Image 1 (tube, rainbow, N blue to C red):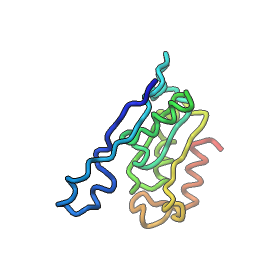
Image 2 (image 1 turned 60 degrees about the vertical axis):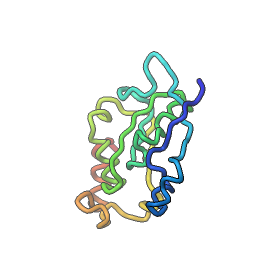
Image 3 (image 1 turned 120 degrees about the vertical axis):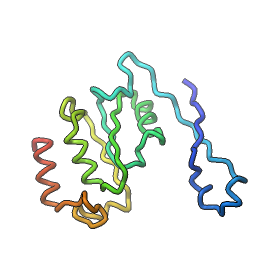
Image 4 (image 1 turned 120 degrees about the horizontal axis):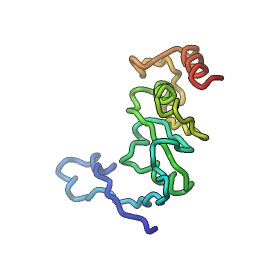
Length: 146
């Protein structure tokens, strides 16, 4: 199936220009392949083999889940939240979800931003989503049964 062209609406570098120069540069175009058609539908939310869990950088507008689904030819479930919630809360939030409880994926990909890797679950950056490392481990064990 040939790739389709999609236009990045926010233009990553465009917004860094002075306001009077922004109109001189169009938003960046990029290619995204269409998901592979199958009887079950590779992007169906229920029963997916693979779950992508992470911050808004995994959001549908970036089509990362479409690309993963296309390349692996497998169904993909997507669960994302704004990065301000922090990677630890985002993971636990997915593990508490009905989707996870009703059908555990074979593979779970937990997406972390490089800058967040040095922050522990209790970092003040996570505000109301902060928790101690022990709380995170205990809740993780409870939710996955380990």
